[in-house]
Image 1 (cartoon, rainbow, N blue to C red):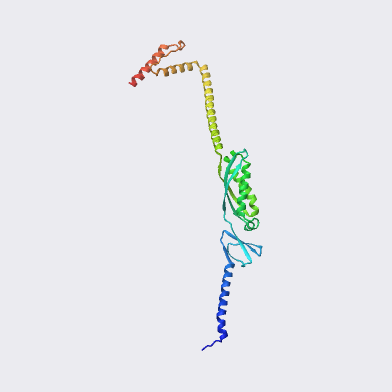
Image 2 (tube, rainbow, N blue to C red; image 1 turned 120 degrees about the vertical axis):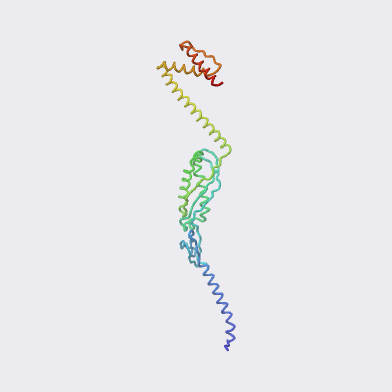
Length: 273
């Protein structure tokens, strides 16, 4: 029979509790030391306030309490710029809202160069939107959106490059005009359509006058053609019922012409009955 001294018997539970406590602490420290970031993320690590660099993707180790890390998302982020009231170059007040697409290409700069790169990019986008669109006239704002989008993208990308941010696109979503301006534009469009219609009618009359002048010149050179045209006119008139035809004596054989017209008239009347 194994007999333990009384002193050792009292120490056994204390040693077990100590070992168990140390194991728990080791597990907690190990769990807090191992971190993981996804493929589209990076962890910017600081040790006692000094920059160590960016880690990831996958697992990485850090010293608890000593190391601190900031997780940065590298995917394309969308910012909905709130509606901005802008006065255009021709003194028209409009409300414009836009969308900014950007991504972080340097996580270290995004953390160390600016305090909050998301908030800073949003505010900078609003400022650039007001500045550039304020230099454009209303017609350009409505008709040249693609050109303005490219200009906004290039300007904002240059300004955010020191922050490690790449602006991929800026798109103007909507341009809201005042009610008075909408009515004025409707009147302008109606006046423009009226102007085009009058121009078309005038061009048609001009072309018709040129053709009639050429026809008159041809009749003057060929009197026989003019005589045939007169006869054709009488035949057309004779097709109408209850009409009295009065023609000048210069037409010659009026009896023959009128008889021919009467026969055509009687023939058409018989077909009608």
